[in-house]
Length: 513
Image (cartoon, rainbow, N blue to C red; front, side, top):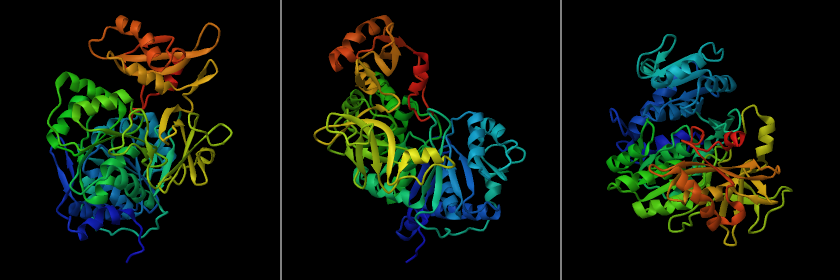
């Protein structure tokens, strides 16, 4: 019995002793359609660990990973954990100045990047005093960099370094929807904690499952979907390194035959519209999940009508690593975020810190074993978010008499109308229930008397007539959520500003209102 708590032993090496060496762990959905078995992943991650050691990338030094969803990613991530270095999974859709900030903030000594991203990432790496090694996957190797193949060539495989369960394993960076992104530090034990709770007790992932997540690995939600959960039971993950449009996603579901599909609300909404026009392909879906933002009730109902499968809407965060509040199989109530995931405790508090009563609105706090170890070099932010064992989510919720949680919006997004708190999300749900509306966002705007009232920005479905749709929307919303909540102004836009992970950036719309 080993005392080594390195997460790579549980998620990678364990499967070899359990007879899964020849089982496919990952396969790519496009291009060369490469695949990787659990046995190959164990050997390749040992090789990556040895290559880090040979390159003098030392334990606890950060390795910035700006990598598309391709089979090299799990090799590098788990190889990093085996070496004791800290993989920093970074968003592949950022701009050069943001990469420059993160590389300097994290003080990464090594950068690994997919060649398709080099044009954006390269200028951020130039002149960085912390970087000692730059590795490029695929394509032509830029001057001053090393190819991934050369990095591994001739390296001596290394076994997993012995660590404790509270040793730092990897970092993620928050989306930075309201400011500069923050480095979120996670420990080895957190990965298994999410697998043992949401993965096992809500998702019910099985060895015979094939999982496809549109949320990429750099996203906490995608990391759990694509690696943690399937690898906890020896299942197979489908990787796709391109943009997940509704047409592409539908084709992947039809061709790759996933049994578990992991989406986000904006993609679900767009795909529903696509399927209503183009029809539903044959598929083997048994489970669909959603996170990132609250799933509108209308979208969940339509998805079930089209596919015959419910979407389990859940709530997670980068700070908690994955979902801690969710609907469950056979117990789905659309328009709610469900019930606490086993293993997590939740409470909602008012502005004075007192717990709210059913029907009231308060900020959601969560306690569980997957909580982050804090933010990197952000002491004040860490103190404000992590209060002992409890983590503040920044989300406002109402709790029903039955104990279900109803999302009301981000703390910064809520505002009062006639002295009463208004949930932008509630009004947005009413707006997208209209057959002509694809997406909606609601923010406050001051009227002639200086009082805040709701303003809506909407994206129309193809074929919807702007004047006709806008003219009907105010009464439509009044009938669904109440006369005082309807948007006093409605503006049609081509698209809504979003983070790279699909979250609507309402602060940008507030600046426009």
